Image (cartoon, rainbow, N blue to C red; front, side, top):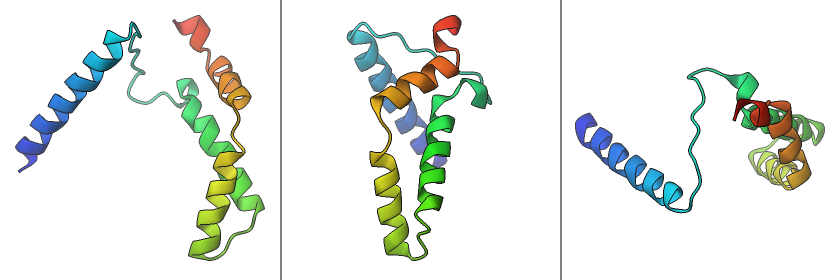
Length: 91
């Protein structure tokens, strides 16, 4: 069964890669463990901090707190995280 899943994953990866490259975009892969180059780690930090600040204690309030925290992420934040992770210098 794992072989079937691996083949399906590889097929999907190929299709996604082809679709992205067809737009003229270039895929750039990170080393296996590189949190210092991963803007998503900075986003997770902001979302977790905001979620904690809302002091949610039930499943419903945690879900709502996460939604509110995600809505607080702005394009300006994302641009700053990419700058902080040295993407312009690495490309």
